[in-house]
Image 1 (cartoon, one colour):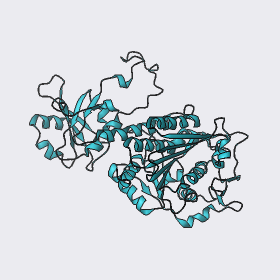
Image 2: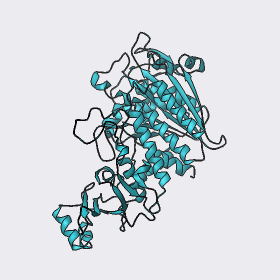
Image 3: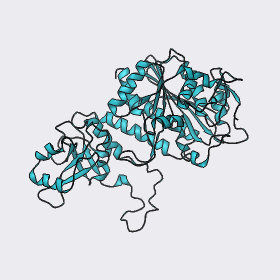
Image 4: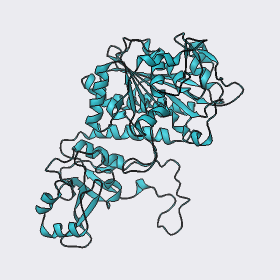
Length: 480
């Protein structure tokens, strides 16, 4: 993503093509201040400053040169204002010219960077029709592209940290399960640890039982690919302890409560929580936040075999609580239970878990808005504020105590699902709450982690949701 920018704005601005953000409310005033020939051109082109619309302005001397580009933006500053421009504009150097401050320059730069993202791992070029002027070996990275001069005052490294972490998150989620199983996910954590001088341990297979992680083992034992608990630590041991936990179900068949084919189609994304936790750990370490970071990822495949766990089995968890399995397709909360117990055992300053946990959260909030649960009001409010500030919104749902009754079991300490059809996202969060002590500030984010359709800067496939909001909150919390 670094090659999407002109590294220094100084000396480049004189030759860079200006991008002029304008919204509908300010369009007429802006047009009135432009040279008459430009105004006539824009009116003839039908430019009405709709968000995302671009209108190149030809240079007076012609020759196919561009003198500038009018960019339609939302009345409220929009992260995605320049996301479509990065791929739509002709190759060349561009700069933001925004005297009225319609865009936040850092957000605009991040949107530009995210607009250059593409998942290319499996693109060989061999399937392209003849006569398109490209060779099989040519990739988007080889081509000339539009580049943006860093806006004045923008911390480019901070923007790139967010963009590269988002790209990592998207890449991991979009990679199919044949190349992203528990072993490969663990290898990604080990690779990250090596790059940042962090320590990393992996507990695998039957060793999980010996180490006291029976629920992770139970969920993953049916697969030919052994389950794992991946544990990364980084930073000053005396610093505040920040622990991230990510649901790492690398593929979810539903187990013996088998999903239909339509429900199984996107289940490569069921490790989306792990991808978010890993990407956030990368952001924390890259930024050098003053924390003692711990990353815990239970990585499993929920498969079907003669060794699969069954509906109404009773599992013992790391905490010692017994859980009656209400549905083998609600496996994520079981592996998180063991990981959260381990996280809580160190009495951390903050625990954040990410999970593609429930369809109920998507029914309530739709695909783009993650559900936020927290046992600490101040932490929840800080997260909501941070999400609004960086354009990465979350919506808080309640840990409604009265619904604990829905998780009652007649044979075990708790049911994993309960018997009722209502409040599925809340009861899942209430189940997880049992594995975190009241004194530990804890956040649970239930997310889709997927774009179902292409939008500028947000291609179809894996997506980071809540990642930048949580980073902004913890950066503020720990005084970075």
